[in-house]
Image 1 (cartoon, rainbow, N blue to C red):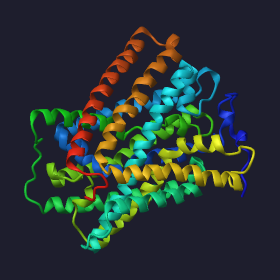
Image 2: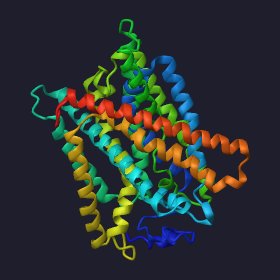
Image 3: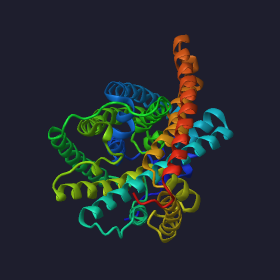
Image 4: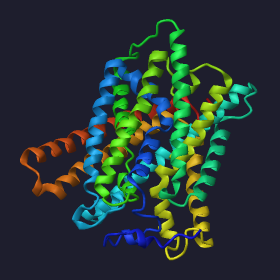
Length: 436
């Protein structure tokens, strides 16, 4: 069925907003909340026992997760309040940055977002491929189906899904499916981890390695703590919510930081408790149990990852559809459908190639958190808040936001160095198109 022209959904005089070919301002707050919960409950949670708890230990891991949750909720809450800066609704992060700083910052922000989206999507394709490979290994020891082949299959499925779902609001029912899939692999992983932990000897919870490696691994864990709560595309997600834009987005954030947190805290802590410092970067590779249960969990991971990738890729899809599509035609017209087929197919083909070339899951969350998520969520957002709300802030409030700008700028530099070091180490350990 044809949809109305997208300009119908744009309720502010923002000239940039009128150029989008995606649906704007039509979703209830709880649908946006499901988007955030689905993204938080993605298959990346199966790596958090390894990338956060192992380098930080019990005390550091628990404190880090709680403190970063509070800071992230505050930062996203603050960013949501800037959605209507200057009396205009800014449906893209780069539009907001361009409004506050000018054209140059518009380009810088879009570059950071592109890096964020691209690396997260690569990670999702790798995770989906890892799920397929795990299923294959359960039923065959021939080794014919290599990880790069599984990654290619994952990329093809992600492309098919991308062609059929024109924009973020069109996910609707799929968000419920994604949440259900998350619960399936979370419950199975949680149950098998607890059962295995109860029947295992005492685990080693010590933080191992040289002093240098401990320091760099700790820094990498800090980058992951910044990454796991934040999307880097909050204004684009907020663009889909109905009026009142700010209040409804805040409700969605509260849903994310309650229901969403429960989902991944449970499996993160259970995985580390069950396996200690020997836990796997993909937790389903460490658990043992009925073959049907492990298979079901990996199937759920695969399809939930396809949905999660679509959420994070939506700003790129919106850019491609708006640039090459026709806004005066139905999103299902021949021209717009062909545009999606070619543009999204090209983007996902390249992403799949890079994923198969460098299948190192942990690196992508580290590097993404360092070079894009930290600047977008904490540095730029705090500075924009000072610029937009400066006259309304007390001296103490301005000092607080400036402290955040400088602290997270320094953290971004330090964590980027640590992430690049990890990439270099992995290049020494693994070869391109690795199968592991």
